[in-house]
Image (spheres, rainbow, N blue to C red):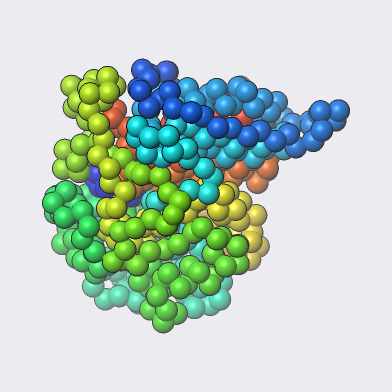
Amino acid sequence: MSRNVQVSVKAAVTAAIVAALVSTVSCSSGPPTPSATSPTATTATPATSPSTPPTPSAALQPFDAGTLRSEFERTAKEVLVPGAMMLLVTPGGTLTASYGTGVRDAQRAVSAEDHIRVGSVTKTWTTTVVLQLVQEGKLSLDDPVSKHRADVPNGDAITLEQMLTMRSGLFNYTETLELNSAMDTDPQRAWKPEELLALAFARPPYFAPGQGFHYSNTNTVLLGLIAEKVEGKPLGQLFKERIFEPLGLKGTIFPDISSNSVPQPHPQGYFFGDNVLTMTTPALPEEMQKEAAAGALAPNDVTDVNPSWAWAAGSGISTASDLKILGEALVNGKLLKPDLQKKRLDSVAPINTDSPGGASYGLGIAKFGNLYGHTGELPGFNTFMGSDPVNSVTLVVWTNLAPAADGRDPAVTIARSIIGKTYQPLA
């Protein structure tokens, strides 16, 4: 999840997760931009013929492609994105909808086959591989991290389970000024995982292991290195053998740390301001927000920023079509054996114990209302992936702008509004 591994790489990673989870209602409409008038393509597929209308689950609203499409377009305009993609599957029907363009001021429509940087959705790959190694007896959730690395602060007291659930207390290297500054001055730098850990280990932990929650990319980078050590293979090969090939994910890759490119076809990714400017808050200063809304401030094209700074925590690339398959596999047991699959879904717990109905996170997976999944953000791209195994609902949304000028996560904002039109309001 959210600002899951955004390159305004501050503490707002956690804020984005929380924002993604705590609400399933649409926000008020904002001003449109010139790009909001770009062509829109949609495809709606009923699940059954008109003569036999489906009987939706009690938790779902009747499937209405027109309403859903309008809500998608309205919210995409509100967050000022050049382009967006939505794929919604319900028992009542399927809607695939695109909005705007993949390139600003150009008639290049986006599609479900476009490759996009998926940010922290990558965490679901890393954590799934670790859980597979657990079920094979090669790792244990109770292992102290010091068993695998001797240099981790509090390593004797931190378990792999606490790293999987973001309750280790380890400092998040993406909150350092060093990384944010380097991302602005040398955006194509290839970062080695050990360099990222050095940034984290130079800072004291946030809290004692298990005594709180703090979304930290350090956890997932460590887990990726541990998986590589146990298996003696590069992490990308583990993903390919254990996730991509078994699920038939044809458009999903884990790029080498030297790679700045995105496979074709792909949209361009856009980012307002710079990383140091948005370190404290992802929102631009108020005057810059006004300029962005008026079309006087253009976002920067950051498509080719090297994602190695996120590595196992967020450098992956995928497509909406593949994310649908992945999102469903995370909840239907295709990647884990039944006992561990149940443990994973049952592990999702409130981030704040004083707010049990709020944001929830578990073993490398979050929960958004009824949907399990993850969100992700890198400069220029925001992704939402969620699947509800009870009501057979899957939703994927991505945008080629991140974050919005006002600091919101665009794909998460759109997804929240779609969820509000898919499920019956809570009593």
